[in-house]
Image 1 (cartoon, each protein chain N blue to C red):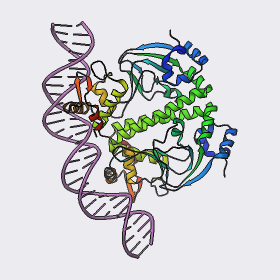
Image 2: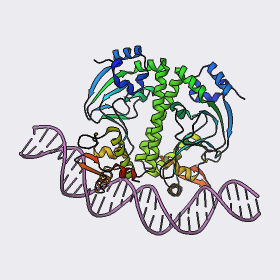
Image 3: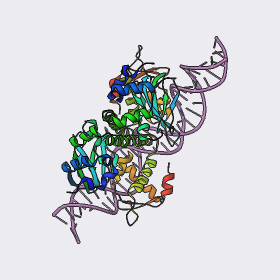
Image 4: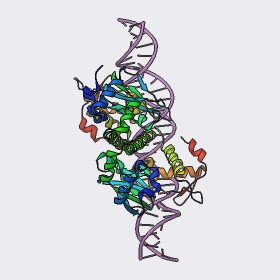
Length: 225
Length: 225
DNA sequence: ATTATAATATGATATTTGTCATGTTTTGAT
DNA sequence: ATCAAAACATGACAAATATCATATTATAAT
């Protein structure tokens, strides 16, 4: 099994603040795992007794709302840590994590991470800074949810996916969400999401092929209100 | 000036994790301040070079949305810290803070707090846990914003205010928000907020006297969808 | 290749929410 | 106490979004 000390992925998250000795210890007790597309990593209410370091693939974090719909709060990608919050907060998971494509992750048991959090202030501070940043992003999302139109939010998601995942050889967004997932990110009915995507298509902002979406006019998408 | 070591307020926030020596040092450089109702404590984009410890009063944290409306993200109350995120993240403020009533706060310079964050893992971990909790709350708010109706969200706010601020001698909510503030918490037009409050009144869930609101039937408010 | 299943698409309509206009009440300064 | 300004309130209408019904197309299993 590969070693944490030599893993470049840790440069992208708080694990980079660990000392060599700490990394060696963690490397010794971590477990590597392949997660298939569609597989549930953990669910709301589960006790998450460790942290996942995402080496490859993408998963969605979602929460079941009182109206029975799933709302997708965040996409977790290569380089991210998954499950820190439940760990730090000593609580069960507030969100469910489901793989959007095949993933490769390392699982680090809770006890190991907590040990480092209690002894290595640099590590703790790095994680604190990460969470401060996440909190800022969350506030921005709250404001967008509250104040922007569904059409605007859907355009924002397309722009976000384009910026963060890029496009494949044919120019289609490199990540494929179902129309239902789009609706669940934006917070609208699936039919509404489909309808607005159709409208974007008619206006020439995007084109589609099956579930794949190609952005044809990023500039105009950004102007949508 | 009163001393941090003897201040009971710190029991309510992360400052409780500081050692006696650290508290004495902080006590020596903190400044106490009275903030009048309506006064701006800091604004979006300001460099916040320290943390406020709220000894009394309430302020709102809000963000200007792209459509020109202010959205209230959070109420900060007695016992809370204000401004940690900008501090930890080394960034300018993402939100504006405005006093909702007369406040009494202590201001602790950034350098002092950062010193403790780098040296006292217990303090850092406590703040990390606080942020993990805030992040969980934020996710819940995002889902509510995306999935619940305006009426439902407004009912939720009334319940929240009742739970967190209680009522005065006459049974009115102990905290008074303007109708515009209600709209800005819920994320709706002021007229819509007013209209729904009127509807609640007609249905006997609440009664009002000027801007004051009295909850008459908490149970039925909780059943609103 | 065929077929069942799920995903996508669209129309018709109901509901929710926003906007603009206008009137009333409350509040705070003098 | 008076008055102007702000906050509150409500009607009429427009726009956005949800819901239900029903095709159509894509996907995956056999």
